[in-house]
Length: 50
Image 1 (cartoon, rainbow, N blue to C red):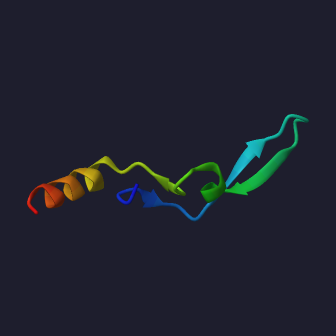
Image 2 (tube, rainbow, N blue to C red):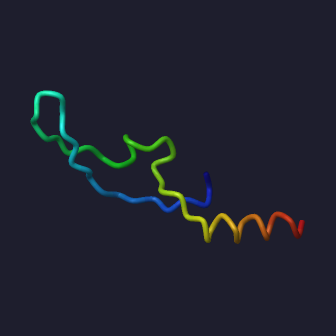
């Protein structure tokens, strides 16, 4: 969760009634971040050396 990349953006979602609504990305994602595999590998390497 710590290795993700945060995005401070609004995402347009379509509601059931067909209207569109802007929602902060952080409300759509549990961590408010997007997976960053490269950062995850770097963190794993650091942790394995401890």
